[in-house]
Length: 305
Image (cartoon, rainbow, N blue to C red; front, side, top):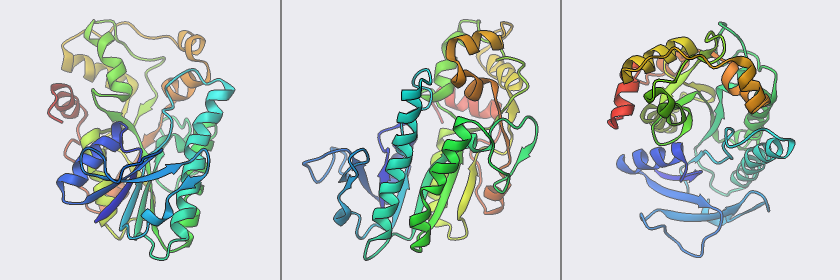
């Protein structure tokens, strides 16, 4: 297929582009500005600018599919009002611009796979969360709700839309695990807060596989939990990571310290949790490469997955 990809240089985007290329698809990268037709790796380029509302729609014509991953990282700094607005704008403006442009094409792509996050559900304790569970409360829940709603023009135009609710991505290149590794390797890692909050995780290789699977599986549409089938508590994650690294995990990080350091971001990203169900993805036939946390951590940390 001819696949357009936004956010192609990010952690997830890079893995998705690599897998799609390996599987024989032609990649068209949406980039902020370009005087060139192709990137150095041979991918075609499509100029767009979500802030100014510009996109080269003529180059969207003829795409078979689009993967939309662009957006500012949510853990890139303390959530000041300005940062929160920038996080929202980077997702909502880009999604609205892209989906409106796709809906107006003469020949529209068959499918759009658009990123969302398990933050949609808010902090729900041990409740098992399915795709039809209600949205939660808080900044991330409201962001994800509006982010998914911004894909509606594409869906109404007849494009099959899949909203990937992505969990904690395991990678040593970026994301939460990459930030956790050094303190754990030094033996100063430990549970966060009570440790009872759930972490719904997914290995980066599996996340790329889920994107590819969603592109080609006509039976999938709407929200899709992109998580491994075995969510764990933060305490379980901590103990497993310590065991994999052969290091003690006896120094807990107190709630108060996190709130003082990170404010609202600490509450929503570190002290809150979601126990998210992967049944819809499994029922559709996706086979996880790394469904077990210890196996996944060993593979990812060794650089093999």
